[in-house]
Amino acid sequence: MMHQPALSRRLCAEAFGTFCLVFAGTGAAVVDEVTGGGVSHVGVALAFGLVVMAMVYALGNVSGCHINPAVTLGLWAAGRCERSLVLPFIASQCAGALLASGTLRVLFPESGTLGATLPAGSVLQSLVFEFILTLILMVVILSVASGGSEIKQIGGIVIGGVIGLEALFAGPISGASMNPARSFAPAVATMHFDHLWLYIVGPIAGALAGVPLGRFMHPPSGFKAEVRGES
Image (tube, rainbow, N blue to C red):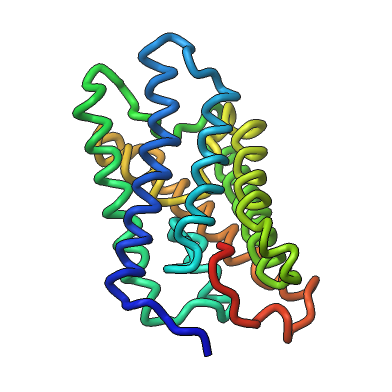
């Protein structure tokens, strides 16, 4: 069996990875806001995709690089994450995200939203978007985890690419969160909680729904094989 890093290192990796995700991703949105479009919507989408890709390769061998409470819950439901790790991982992810948003609050006090996810249309529309986007992400993560070594080697590119793609087309509608911690932190930093629930419910429901779909499309033996560093 592959040696497991110490729990403290795994929790540190989850906190650091989520910090980087929120700092770079929502940071791009904040810079775009305060500069009047200096980054652009495409640039924000690329920032999210690229930072996730970098974190998968940097931290995958430490904690699996979940950096997303919905993904942690999905991997637990799929039998790929120990139950004892679920709450510590989620707490570490939220702590890292909060630290990132707090840092951005200090750096950009003039920002009104700090990159918060807000529905552009109806709440139901954004809820459905978040559900579907996270379902797709979860199926991709599980598919990479169930693939051969050549697929796992490019797992970071695939997963980062999916996040960038989804942020590119769905960002203007729901914000393309797919991650409760990513939405939770800016909401706390700005004290705006009106629509936060949908960015918790939608991604978690989507991740959990992606598990039986992924299980159906992949052989049970491959689906549950232990894989490190591709989520």
